Amino acid sequence: MPSVAEILFYMRGLWRLFKGDPSAGRYLDFTERGLKRSFWSMALSMPFMMMTTMFTLAEQQHLAFAADIRTVIRTALVEGLSWVVPLVVFGVICMIAALPKSFPRLVIASNWMSLPVNVIAAIAIALIASDLGILSEIVLLFLQVIVLGAFVFEIRIVYVLMENRLMPTAAAIVSASIIALLISDIGMRYIGGL
Image 1 (cartoon, rainbow, N blue to C red):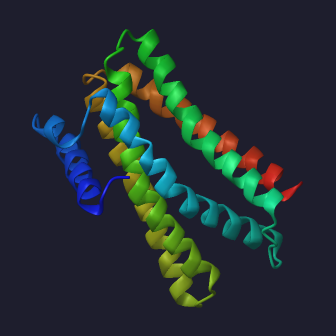
Image 2 (image 1 turned 180 degrees about the horizontal axis):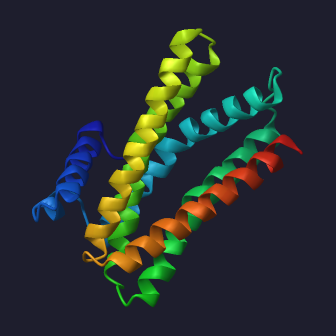
C-alpha cells in the first residue's frame, strides 16, 4: 500500500503533467508496476465513494438509510463499475486512435487523480448531509467548483497523455463522462431497489 508521501509525490506528478512539464514522468510511475500500484487509489477511494453514494441515496429518499450487507455490496459493485468502465472506454479510444502507449498512462493518471476528488466529495457530502443551514449551501457550491475543476484538470491530463490530439481527447472525455453518468444513474436505482 502506498504511503502518504508516495501519494503526494504522485499528486505533484499530476500537477506537472497538467502544466505540460516534461519532468512529470519522473513523478508518475508509468511502468507496469506503477499501473498495478495505481489501483491502490481505487481501494483507498472505495470507502469514500460508497459513503458519498449512500448519503446521496438517503437524501434522495428523504429517510434514514439502512446500510445492510446487500446495499453495501451493491454500492461497491456500482462504484467499481463506475471506476473501471470509463478506463475501458479510454482503452477503446486509444486503440482506435492508434495510441497504445497512452492507455496505461491514462489509467495511472486517472486512478491517482480520482483519489483526492473522492475524498473531498465525501467530506463535502457529509457536511451537506449534516444539515448546517446556509453552510451546507456554501459547501455544495464549493463541491460543484471542485468537480468542475477536476473535470477541466482531467481534460488537460487526457489531452497531454493523448499526445495533444484533440479528437481522441474529445472522444475519450465525452464517452467516458456519458458512460459514468449512465452507470451512476442506473446504479442509484439498483442500489435503492427502485
